[in-house]
Length: 167
Image 1 (cartoon, helix red, strand yellow):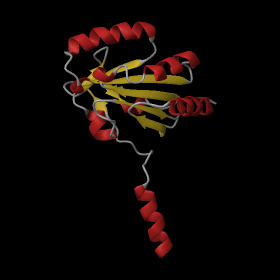
Image 2: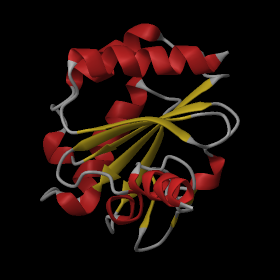
Image 3: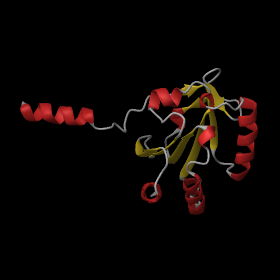
Image 4: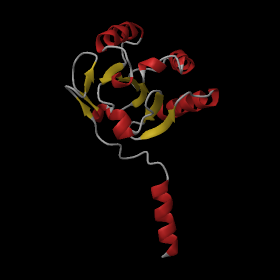
């Protein structure tokens, strides 16, 4: 009995990477850069790199973006999603859209999402007024997560996690 209780306590005290709340952004809650609904159920079938970012902290992890770009992962097996915490910035949404359209020229396969209501902060506990990086495996389960400024060691682990799960 004591062992069962101890295991239960340990399981509930560990961060859970399964069972992320399902999110749909549309209308006042958010949308893709193309003005369409964004549904997290698409995050299956290949490895996904999610970056959740406050536009005011866009330069916080430039080194991570450069390292990921250098890997040039094949888009048949790898997808990327940039979730912009639009409510965390002073920038008007029109300015954000222009900046994201320019960014899309460099990363045309990335899905750009505007979160107008901090849904990902509230539902997935992404760090507000900063950035968060999450890798989701082919089954839709997070297998890596870091918030704030990533260290060089974090970047190595991030890239290794992606490579190990592309197979």
